[in-house]
Image (cartoon, rainbow, N blue to C red; front, side):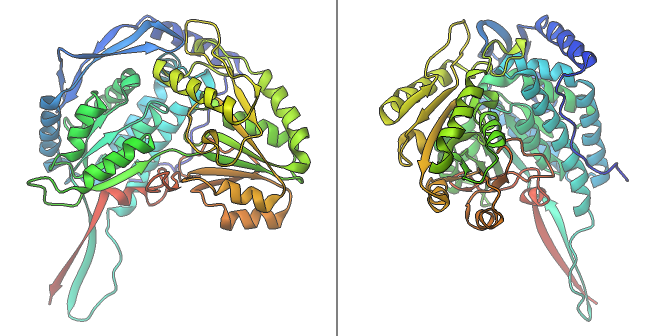
Length: 515
């Protein structure tokens, strides 16, 4: 098998008339499908349940995008059974055959690109370019993992030893649980699902309750590509019920989770306990968010720094674990930089996502409530320079918000808000800036704007984050280019989209035969 070399999928920006019109057409066609029902997929069978999950449009919550069946404990058990049955044959498929299935899935996803982007616009409030980036990343994950898996098919090199035949080879772990977030509901779900199955595991995937429809579309694509029944099972349900049950289950071999720190800590604790009948130590992979800092020193290109700050803070309404939520500015350029940032931020257009504004709605009523509560806290902890309010309209629209004069230990400078809120921290010098940047319990992304080589090299060594960016925005990691994952309480640093990621889902077996 000789697939084309991997290269990241270009992100559509809709500058051409052809792309613009194709997206308008896709939005119309997808809207015509609103309200459809999506069953569970367990062992290749469509399973309907009395309980359902309703997914609405955050730009207009009265609109029902779709309705999915809702799994309970019985369906969780059935999904585990189906996955273990499928594992008995899937694990023995030649790696080239597994990779071919996934490369076909990538081609199908590419063919349906505009349609999938439209679903993301409606279901979670992404503007067109953010939706395009989400779909492109999903395609990248499939291709990258399908190709990367081929390097493990011949095992690992070992040192020859006289009189013996020694070999070491990789085998899959078994059946795992994927618990995905709503903020990249196609890309992250796809990556977390496809990586384990690429190397012979089977999974039960529980998408976020806010984004069950786009998740169902992924399973349509996997089925069309020829993925055998039971290898991946679609199981929307309550995190506190079905998610928690699957995490503690003795037949769950691994858990792949992306979400909040609080939920991740509970998963880690639960998975560490040995359940009756369990015969392995579960592997747990966690990506738990950040409180990401962007440093700007007195030598920086302020135009570029202002643009990158606004892009990093307000892209997808700040609902990225990599978003810049702390701007750490050296005193000498604070006023000049803030003038530019406030000017750029004031110019951002907020509105329904289908109209392709700069910013759409936040994800849900719960998310709106959380962000507004932090804005209230911020008004006690800093000076509100811009925004700080809910906007008119039926959707969950919040004005892009800037707080100045924020202390490094303020709650809005330490806790993940996951919304369009930027805290500005003024510091006397670069030494202090670096100290403030590292002064959180997280360590996901960070950035530095500086023209001083020695400062960039010092940050390269000392800025303790998993993904560090110099003189550019701190969001938008590309699969295969910038392996993604954080330090400290940002997670287990599994580095999704990196050269070693698939090893998380493999175990090495060593066999020796005496001649």
